[in-house]
Structures are given as C-alpha cells and as structure tokens.
Length: 131
Image (cartoon, rainbow, N blue to C red; front, side, top):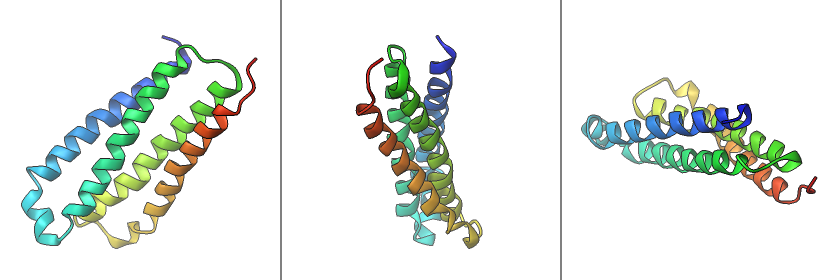
C-alpha cells in the first residue's frame, strides 16, 4: 500500500463503519425518538449520503492503486472533499435529527457543496492529460 492510497482506504473504512453503525442506530435504537420528532427522514438522508460516499471513497482507493499524475491528484482532492462533505453534511443532519442546536443547520449546505465539489474533481480527473 502506498501513502497515496492509505488515506482514501482509511477514510472509506471509517466512513463505511460509521455509516452502517449510524444507519442501524437510526433504524433501531433511535427509531421511536426520531419518529416522535418527525426527523426519521432527516437521519435517513444523512445515512444515505454518508454510505454512498463511503463506497465512492473505496472505489477511489482501489483506482488510485494504478493511477498517477494529474488524474490521481484530482481524485485525491475528491477524497478530501467527500470526507469533509460527509462530516459536514451528514454530521450536521445527524446532529439536528437527534435534537442538536439549530444553529448547525447552516453548516449542512457547506457539506453538500463539498460533496458536489468532490464529484467535480472526478470529472476533472477524466479530462487530465496522461503523463
């Protein structure tokens, strides 16, 4: 394993593990509480985006094993954006759904922008010149 693939693989593992754990908590341990607050759909949205991007991180980690140059650099930026996006977008939604302070609400769109920026870097990687 190279240092370049280590962070994406660690991020994929961490976010995959926490995504499954938080999704299960929302579906089981917190189901009644979230439903009572009318926030079950918010938790489900957080878990969905969390897990989708964990899988994307895993795909990038595998892809980076054979990549080089500008495309690899851009994909590493996608990893950074997705990692920040999961924490900001999904993290703020989990917090809000569990009764956290409402001042975190404005953080959510920044997480969404980070997730979208990651996908922009994937598109940019597709246009990178081979070295």
